[in-house]
Image 1 (spheres, one colour):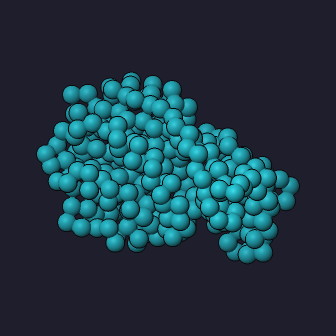
Image 2 (tube, rainbow, N blue to C red; image 1 turned 90 degrees about the vertical axis):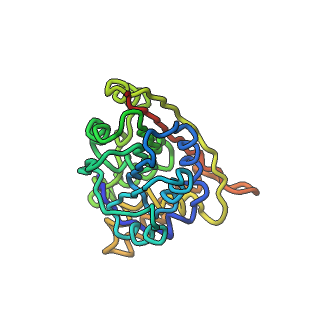
Length: 265
């Protein structure tokens, strides 16, 4: 599986409103932070638009967004300010170098193999009473991904794409996260929500996934534009059948998993 695909911030932000809603729902469950002023890290900050929301909510906090994409960090720099900065980091190896009051991650951990095993080290860098909060897509079995994997593993494409797409185990079951965080001494709340995103435009589900899950396939075929366009066309036709349009738009059901874990005193 490709864990470090190239990113296109403009493509990702084409559905910024829909992508921002789960982040707001996650933050709504974060309790008060122990530090004054608090220290916050956004793990996998992307283009920084939601990292800026953290600085707006905790108006005295010092906030750092971490990401391993140069393209995303270049866009994020526009949001930097006196209390908000951004830094390069790979979550597969990142470890806290100071004490944080809030560690938050929005739709990033699915790209980090072994992220469950990183939790203990991350919590070591969290202040007592601090919070670790994250959300990840929990829809790897949805047509959006299942059709991509099925096509990528077909005779025509398996040699080039069979090894690059996200696997079914890239995100764990809700109870797995609850058990791990509770055993690490956290008061933990885990839940799932299915959003029914109503998307507009031509082939909007394809447009959505071009900003996220399709990136590894686009990277793998980048040196062969004819093959890339052929794969995208085949995938587009499958998505049209799986997600039919209506007069009001195209509905994309999207399930997400949330966890809010408060470290014991």
